[in-house]
Amino acid sequence: MKQSGHVPVAAPDFGCNPRMSHPTSARFAAAPARILPERAPPPIAGAEARRRRIVFLARDLDTLRACCGSLIATLKSRGDAILCLADAAHSDYAMALRQMGIEVETLAKCGTGLALRAPRLDVRALRVRLAEWRADVAVCVGLSASAAGALAAREAKVGRVVTLLKEGAEFGSGVGVGLRARLGGSRHQLRDALQSCHAAVIYGRTAAAQHGHPGLPTAHLELCSVPGAGVDLTEYAETALPPIGQGIVFLMLAPLRNCRGVLDFAKAARLLRGRGAHARFVLAGEEDRGAGGVPVAELRAFKDSLDYVGAPVDTAALLRACHVFVQPAYAEPTGSEVLEAMATGRPVIATIGHRWQEAVDERVNGILIPAQDATALAEAMQSLLRRPDLIPAMARASRLKAERRYDQAMIDRSIVAVLDA
Image (cartoon, rainbow, N blue to C red; front, side, top):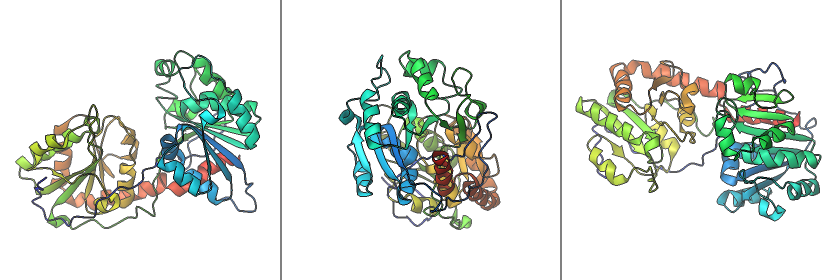
């Protein structure tokens, strides 16, 4: 595709970077709950830490990698024995785990699965496997794993059972009708699972995440309210902004899907280019040929205003070459690009009501806009074009918030403290 940039910007090497989304957590008393302090707990001394046998249960390894990839590596590095159980365990991640010396098994080998819609979950085979492996701690990732795994772990007399749930879809404000639909009417399965847990890590900051949901048995749990994501501050180091006088570069990183706001970004770029904006609008993302995908051919209509550079090959290089990161998604909040941009030291324009809303402080480290509103997005970018002198301070604020709230090393230490309690 022909690039239309009127602003000369050195093209970085483009490429893919493994994505992980991890919770940040600390231990909470049953009542009242408290938010994790924005400081890391002291590291656990080698002589004091008891090496444990820890099993992770998840529907699939992609979910496990997204939620616990860095945590698993941290636990393995300190000497813990790790077993990962999933419905499907054939993936590149399975190979990577085995190369680290971590055991990976499919639940089919245990004679069971984690299908939520089954009228009865047979946990006997899973219980036998946990007992045979002599697990000290069981970590159940998501509703499916919690519904079956927590029950099996307690029956196997596992000493510590922790569930990881997403606030909204799996716990808290969105847990009512949505939960019944996800469980196929068997809400009691999650009740039983929570009663079998010692602690729950909730990815969210709402009152329900902090104090429990009135419709679920959480009074006995150690509730841990966490932001739900982290970033490696070493891999994504703070870097100086490119010279602003050469023109501002707005970058969007996302799969080419309508729900990620790809066309909103393209339309906003066209609006600003029509106003004579001295800027470059760069889009990097892999084409999605499924339902809801935006064909590359459709982007050709915006070739005079939008620079589509294909699938990202080097995310860090793309972030270093931009001034402002744009995330106009209204669904599928799965990527960690916002945190990576903040860690690099870039202001963020994101949508209200989206997962990343809490990462953006209005006019401090970014701007919040309504979802599915290309005009509002154009106005937000225009405001920075009018006042480019604000960008360096917002960039610094992004890095500071990433250090304070989303440091992956801090997150891992916090979750280890929950597992070791």
